[in-house]
Structures are given as C-alpha cells and as structure tokens.
Amino acid sequence: MAQDVQKQKPLTILKEVFGYSDFRGEQEAIIEQLLSSHDAMVLMPTGGGKSLCFQIPSILRPGTGIVVSPLIALMQDQVAALRIQGVSVAFLNSSLSYAEVQKIEAQLLRGELDMLYVAPERLCQERMLSLLHQIDIALFAIDEAHCVSQWGHDFRPEYIQLSLLHEQFPQVPRIALTATADESTRNEIISRLDLVNARLFISSFDRPNIRYRVTQKNNARRQLLSFINTEHAGDAGIVYCLSRKKVNETAHWLNEQGIEALPYHAGLSAQVREKHQEQFIRQDGIVIVATVAFGMGIDKPDVRYVAHLDLPKSIESYYQETGRAGRDGLAADAWMVYGLQDVIMLRQMLSSSEANEQIKQLEQRKLEAMLGFCEVISCRRASLLGYFGEQQDEDCGNCDNCLEPVESWEGTTEAQKALSCVFRTGQRFGVSYLIDVLRGKLTPRIEQFRHNEVSTFGIGQELSELQWRSVFRQLMARGLIAVDMDGFGSLRLTEDSRPVLRGEVSIYFRKDVVRKKRPDKKAARRKRSGQYDDNVANSANPELWDALRKKRTELAQEQGVPAYIIFHDATLMEMMEYHPKTLHEFAQINGVGASKLEKYADDFLEVLNAC
Image 1 (cartoon, rainbow, N blue to C red):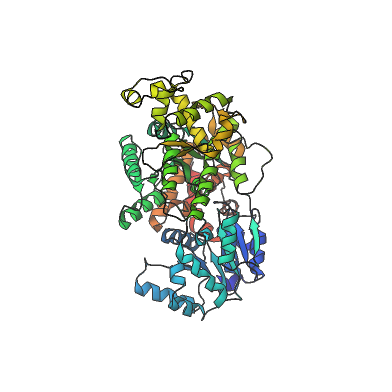
Image 2: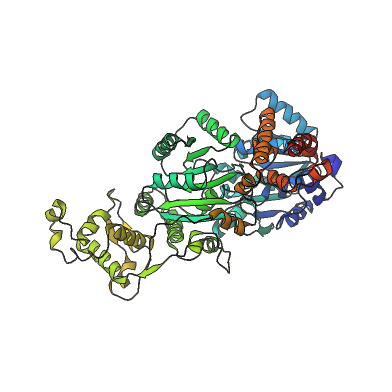
C-alpha cells in the first residue's frame, strides 16, 4: 500500500483505510511529529486510539514501520484487522514455521510491507538487526512502553535492550506508547529508551464511559453474581482475583451458576491459556476469571465490565486492568469489592517481600494510594486522575460516590478505642479478637489471656461487629495500624497513631452502606459517556440487532478472525441508527473504510434492507 499513498494526507488515510472522518485528541499532532522524522513519547488511555498514531505514519512514510509488541495475541489481532483494512502487514513470532518466517523476511527485504510486528526479544537478535540494516525503516513504534520500567507494574527485562534502536538507527523516528505511567515511570521510559529529545504527548487519562464502583466486601461471590445477572447478563467480562486457587474456584462456581467462565493464570499450561484466551476473544458473552497474568494487549473492544474480587496492589495496575473494559467507547463498568482482609493480606505480602528497601517503600506508597482511592468519599474519577497528575474541576457524575454520595461520621473516640485496644492487648492479636474484646465478648481465649480485665474490654458495644471491621479497615488504610509478618494478621500501632491517641487530630470515617439498585443505571452512563448503549440498540429493533450480529459472526468465522475485527458494536449501532440503503450511504458509517466497504457492504446492506 505504501507506494500508492505516499502523496496522500493523514486524514485521507484515516478515512479511506480506517473509515473515520476525524482525528481524536492529539492523534493528528503525533502523526505529524513522526512524519517530520521526530521522536514522540505518547501517554494515551486504553481505547484512545494509540495504534493509529504509528499505523498511519507507517503507511505514509517510505519503508516499513517496525512495531515492537510484547504479546503474540495482540500482534495477531492487530495484523488480522489491518489486513482486512487492506494494509500490507505481517508479524514475526514463535507461532510461525521456519518457512513462514522466510517468506515474511523475503517480503520485508523486497519492501512489500507497510508494517512488521515483532517481539522485543526477536528484534534484538543479530539476525533480525542484520535484516533491518538492509531495508528502509519508516519508524520504530514501542508499544506497551511501561514494560521498560522497573518502577512500573509490568516490567519486562527484554525491553531494556531497546535502547539499541537509537544507537544503531539514529535517523529513524521512534514513538513509545503506553496507557499507564506515573511521573517516575515516565522518566524511566524516557531515560532507558534515550527519548530525551522526544516530544511528550499526554492525553487525558479519563475514560468517561467507564463507571467506577467500589463496594464493601460481604460474600464477594454472591455480590459478583448479583452484579453480573442484574447489569451484565450475557456480556463479556473479566474478573480479577489475587491467587490461582481463587481463580479456579471462582470460574468453577460461576459455571455452576449458569455463567460461562474460563480460568486464566500462569499455573495453567500454555496450551490451556491460549485456548481460553482465544475463546474469550472470539466468542460473545464469555467471562474470563484471571490473575494479573491476563490482559496486557487484549484488544477485545466489547468487554462490558472488569470486576475485582481482591484489591489491586497499585493504582497503575487498577487503571490498566479496568481499562480493558469499554475500549469501543460504549458504557462499561469497573466494579470492585474490597474489605479488611484485603488490606491485611497485601500488607503482609509487602512486609514479607524480599525486594530491597527502596522498592518496598515505593510499593508501600503505591498501596497507600490504592487504599486511599477505595476509601475516598469524594469523586473517584477525580481521585484516579489526580494520581496521574491530571486535575478535574467538576465531579464526574459517573462513579458510585457521585451517583450516591457517601456519608461520613466523626469517629475520633471510636478510633482511640480501637487503637487503645491494640495497645492494651499487647499488639499481637488480629481484628476478630480485638473486636471481641471491644464488644465485651467473653471467650475462652480472652479469659486465657485475661483481656477481660483490660480497660478496653466492653467499651465498644455501641458499634456492631461489621462497623468495627469498617473502623479497623479504615485505620489500616490510613496507615495508623500496621500488620505484623507473623502470618496471623496481628496488628500493631504506627507512629502516626500517636496524635490520634493524644486527641490532637480528629478522625472521620466513611459510612459503609449497601448500595441500592438504581432504576436506570445504564441511562446515567449513556448521559455521561455520550455514546451508544448495547441495550438501546437491542430494544430499538432487536430483530435487526440480532441479524447484524449474526451476519458479523458468520463473516468472522469464515475468515477465522474475532467478530469485532469485522466491525465494532459501535459501527453496527450506527448502521441501525442511519439505516444506509446504498453503497454511498454505507461508506459514511464510522469504521467503514474502502477495503471493508468492498468486502462487507453488500452483506450488511442485504440485512438492513430485509428488516
């Protein structure tokens, strides 16, 4: 394709190849930066259109764009989508036979490829570098660039070698892209990849179509089941758990409840992981239950929710994982249950970590920020964006705290009682035991240790067990109580607790409430996101919606690609809204480029004209 479009403008390629009329945000400026042979460092949220920033310059510039991508699945999906759009593109990875590799290398040497996707470890091999020195290179695109940072959440050691690109190919423009990087991670990416002269593009981290919700944990499985059945029956979703055992048990339990769920974690064989990921990507309505081993590079646009049954270790991880929902811009949910045991477990894991003290302190700060996000009583989106250095002046109207404002209560006395009880019992007991002492429950253990004789015995009967658990959770989240490494969850006081015990500061707690079901949650999300909703299309003309999706599935199966590569849901919804009757009208739909117009217009027009 490159030879045919060298004189065309980026906007022409955007429309004719990708089927969109306008650029979003800073896409056009980033593309012009590369077309001018300058480097770029791009931070753009998942679903924000990062790929177009290097795909269009790769098509327009002489030579082949070399795209560094860490995952085979991501490469294969992006290459399949580009080929359907008429772009000459290939990938090199371990899934190919020797003969296939030779064929692609020959295409590369003949200058027949607009883009080549390659894993970082292959790119750094002598054979690959030798090939690259024999061709014209349009640009280097380093996707998922946060993998270069040891301060980040997804460090990949092979990424560090990518500094050689600037050393060996100093004239070739480079673009590094990521959806998640705080300031320290950003600085390390720039340093390690030698991008000091690159122009920095930071788009808003906001994903307005995602609703953020954190619910107090109270039978997490049942809460998850209610959430799925009430709001996302039949939708594709991801459920994250901290341990492999919990992944297996949750997936099995969901299947027993009639929800098709597949486990995914590093303890499964590569074949099983690949099979489950393939099912999730290609089939509608599959739920994947996973550890953090799953997700980076997943390009499935119609994931309608990401649920966390355990607390993530950092806001970066949380943002990256929740960002896998709603990549198509339609309404999606980031839902999490969070409780006292999460805080205890993560603090124990951090304390027992063998990492050096500098890294442990960094992880401690990241965990504290995550806990702060969970306990915040103001707009969650403002808190999330603030972590990445972005200010939001107004409440978002699309998080739980905005839609159902949280009450707080003055709890300085209760905090002092809880902290005193930790001290009076010797700082060597867990939460359940401490609550029994506070509530004056005479158990054999309390009698054994004679803690029925301490001054804090029975002084907390005004609160229920559940309320005291909330108090201890929030005290831990604020760092007033620490968890010992003894494996029993024993609590001890921190230096920060002294001003509270002395009455020098006041403590306010968020009031835990059971969320009531809102009458029209999806309507609120549509209003916020300004986008279509699946149920709107379904209710407006369910027969046509089903017929369009059925046609899409048939075409996808014939070509061996995921359904969304044919057309995204948003494109189908535009077909329903505008109901094109001619090729010219069909070409005006977003997501319909020249190649897809030729391949699919007749099939979909037949469906549209029949309904």
